[in-house]
Length: 155
Image 1 (spheres, helix red, strand yellow):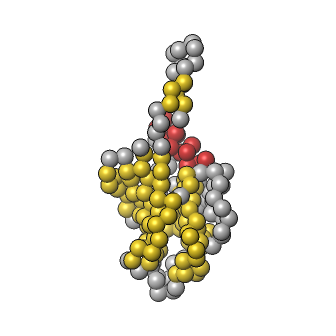
Image 2: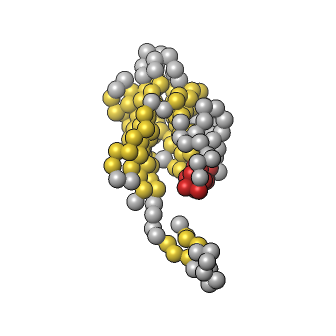
């Protein structure tokens, strides 16, 4: 990311090389079945910048799941076909520069052939921070629980 020093008339830019990476773990009935990468979408990058400025923007609070296989792009603000959204059950700093967000979809919630997930800062509406596609369909039966752990690392 470039850094602009507004006090310098020469408009100097510096690059510090900071990188935000994300990964997602899917746990079906308590067993890890997939570990995936994600895309932090444009609205997610804007949220991070806004939170660094002040606390006027809501923090991540929900994870949603859906059934659309559209490839993630930066301009997306919602899942392609959301079928359920759950409040986070946990947020933790797990290591230096690393934070996790977790949610659980209990038996009977979000049942179906799932292929996408997103991290949101609201219980409804298109305030998506990041999105991932599962590498293949995850079938969640009516009696299954699905846990999702979203991890971000800044390095």
